[in-house]
Length: 395
Image 1: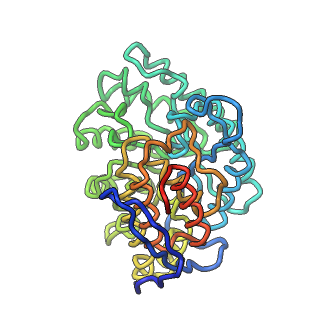
Image 2: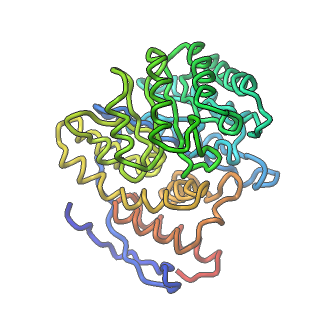
């Protein structure tokens, strides 16, 4: 990739050293015209929700959603040929967005998807109406899963079977996971994506599948899949470990997909090797959607070099965003959507943007620029200057 063309647009940004440093923006990369693309990988973006900053209530406690802007963002993702994974942790599911609001989000997305030919939509089903504790019973976990799965299927939606904090809290052995998953999978109308979310994203899920060691946990997950192959479209693992994903991918039953959830190593995992590849269900695809779409189109045409040329510059950005403390990586996704004009306010469900420092957000800005992802540098710079100004920093 040639060095990006520098523009005359400049801004002073905070640095890690605590000083202001002048930064000269680059020209945005031309990712091609918008429109549906043909891919040889399934690519789902775990999409964020847009908060409504004018709603009455406590922003730390109430999930006030700008439904129009949220739906518009999903239409934007579909227009690029990407699928949407709805009501996942990137939408602050269980971290500000409760089950009732999640179901409304799913209902609106299912309805919107019907207007778009070929739109792919999966929806998170979990147990977050249960408070996780050792006092919860397995029957209560099953009932919570059943409630959510039935509600989503009644809307005509397909399911991502999310990891359960309540199950992690009350399970006493791998056999408990076998019992719960087999019961739920046996009832579902369509094959699901199982989501194994690692403790690096959610500490309450440590020891999932009844094992602290990831290798032994993998054996349990594979046994569950092998016992129910017709009910499993694929598994998404989010362990941020390239080799563990490859090892599990090579052992999956035929026709069961591996969906990478690795926001550190997604480029090489999606490209794959002679023994296979991963499809994608990624939070970072929310923020880098035009680059992801263009790169996947190159890969489908047999142009692996073009795929790498576009996607490789996005990896440092993803690693920076997802290296943030648990819960707060979502702030980086909302920040980039705001910089690119997809929403008018940089506000999070739960008021979480204060958890990211100005130096951290400034580095996010620089890395997005380096990847060619600031589609209107003038607008992005103006919004960044405004953010700095309201925090008492000259830009």
